[in-house]
Amino acid sequence: MEIIKVLKNIERVRKNKYYSHDYMAICLDISQAAYSKIERNQTKLSVERLFKIAEILEVELEDLLETGIKYQFTQASKENLTAYLQRMPSFQQESKDQLLKIIDLYEERIKDKDHLIRELQLSLEQLRLSN
Image (tube, rainbow, N blue to C red; front, side):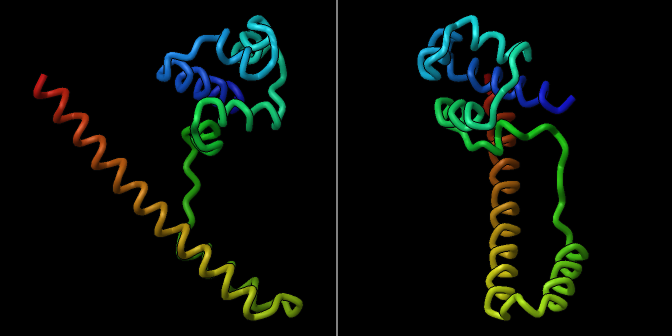
């Protein structure tokens, strides 16, 4: 189940930052036992609380929601979106152009992120080999 992966991501980030259950509970204004139940999936995690956890952990919400499933925005899907937008008469051309520009910008950000990840992985591997 995907929620388990999200909870594992929360736990992983929390441990990497050396944050205790107590610390998280204080920041969330709940008991330590209540926080522990969240990570063990014994209590439902609300969207509001998930946003707050991301804020406490100082990560993007998307990082916590990353479950290993990759969604790829392909050129074909971009073309489908363009065709769909052209069939929407109520959507002004300027809005369509802005939406497509936003998509292009996100594609660039994704490429940059992937490149940075590869560089960091190589650097990490070099550090491991040198020690």
